[in-house]
Length: 161
Image (tube, rainbow, N blue to C red; front, side, top):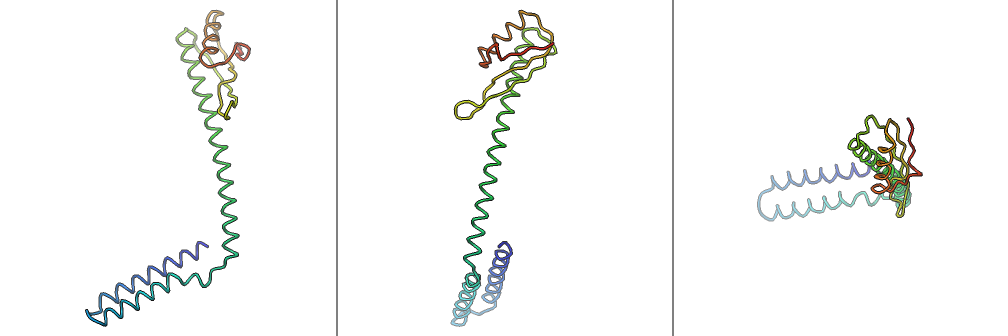
């Protein structure tokens, strides 16, 4: 199919080139109008030439195959987009928690946030895994922050040393 289109474009370009040369060397008058008419017919013939060899059956199978490929790419793109949105939300939520932990005086905190798809399949922070040393008061303050700002309740906040 691509080869057919390539040959068609080359044929149209060659016809235009020949038409340009023929018209540039033809003197003004009746002869130029005849040459112009003949060149016009030649260009139309070259443009419509592939239609005589056009196979509707192969075009229809090509169109179906192309449509299936496009649908497959659409599904892959949608899946990749969902994966990237999930990763961005997890990363941004973890950065948000780390920022708050720094303000609370917690050093060397390791945070992993897990998301879950909500209404409309848009992911939101669901669970947090936290590792590092913090006092009970710091943990409580950070836990309240995660619950109020990110919607991660205390039962889904897991601390490890």
